[in-house]
Amino acid sequence: MKIKVINPNTTASMTERIGMAARAVAGPGVEVVAVNPAFGPASIEGHYDEAMACVGLLDEIRRGESDGFDAYVIACFGDPGLDAAREVARGPVIGVAEAAMRAASYLATGFSVVTTLGRTVVIAEHLVDKYGVRSHCRRVRSTELAVLDLEDPRSEAFGRIRAECQRALDEDGSGAIVLGCAGMADLCERLRETLGVPIIDGVVAATVTAEGLVRAGLRTSKRGDYAPPLPKTYTGSLARLAP
Ligand code: 2AL
Image (cartoon, rainbow, N blue to C red):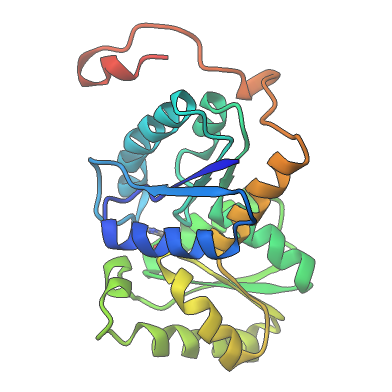
């Protein structure tokens, strides 16, 4: 089985860490290939970044179909392009936010999301509603850390995220924490050891979900809105991406 894990931002060091987190949980015989688009935003921290990242992401999904991948993970917490990717892919496409929120709701009646910049909170809130997990999500909290701060080992990222997780446990009545950025994957284990509650990293949750669905023989439905996009002309610089 081959799973393509796509970091929709173009920061290769983050892609590397995301790939390591996915490989650490992939079962025997599962090949994880972690990539990022060659063009697009270096980090995704708002609606505009998300929209711009979708083109490169969908380009990677299209290539993945030619290369015979069985499933995909979209490794950015806004799950950018998820529905569009499901139109293109035959296998399952799993977004890290959806996978993490669903996993958290198996493990606790209430979870908090701890994310990066405050401006991304509304993106996560929208996803809470979209995925129907409002009654499980107690609160979405920001740390005001920029995504690329997570790449800097000298940043205070771990301490600030741990402190926000602790506040979530104390003030929100949550029993589990969802990490609100794919770039937090490598902090998950240490946070779990310190905080003593389930800490859910979406890269891990999405990888095991994708693998499990493929193993169960399940693919994306091609009936209805996830049917392949209609063939038509795309013009200008998007011409090569026409369905
Ligand atoms: C993210 C993420 O997971 N990757 C990225 O570039 N931005 N999400 C976030 N909330 O900051």
